[in-house]
Image (cartoon, rainbow, N blue to C red; front, top):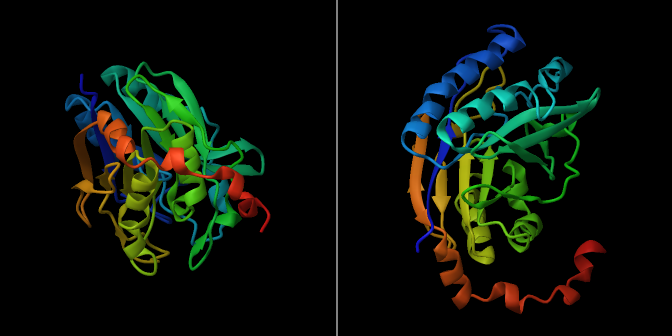
Length: 288
């Protein structure tokens, strides 16, 4: 029997940004803007929904302004618990990326995973933290320390990679070895140096590891930083590396697609990368 999954990705521009309200007002405006799209996903029968990187905030990392520290919150915490209500309402797994405070001065770029009954399953913390060309993330985030967990949700085994992580194949491989069937990569990335990699690296991860990926990027420009256009084009890619559903470049959008998880077995029966890999030969990866 086919294992058909209906999944959704939400790409969104910010309604309020720095200087247009308090940090709480900015966050609340972004959450409120998402809610109709989350409800729409639920009404369409989406089983797994992923939001964009730090979905409730502008991408403030060009600022290197410590005032944003106070917008971080525990995970689980208020925003995750709020999203759990929608997970329960629609029996929908949700991946919820937020700015996490573990304790004072210890902050992470995190994605919480909520099961379809509203149960908090755990979190992934962004492992690779950039610090270049306006993406001054080391000012805000510690590198993740939870490894590469795969979450056994009601519908599928789900892994998470976040934005800059996608430039590193090692974690993508570990997610596959840990059993991921779908890997979601919530992102905030602008046109320029890395745009051509957006449709290169993640299809390569999907093909090299024989799983599906859902790749999310926000849209619009964000003042006062104006580091460039967040170019959207969120998409789903299959285990053969083929993009089979894609959103627009510049519109707020819920992208919904259906796919058959049995394709993973079909593809891996042909491309035996996990059988043929030689981990005993790769020690230099951790020595150089």
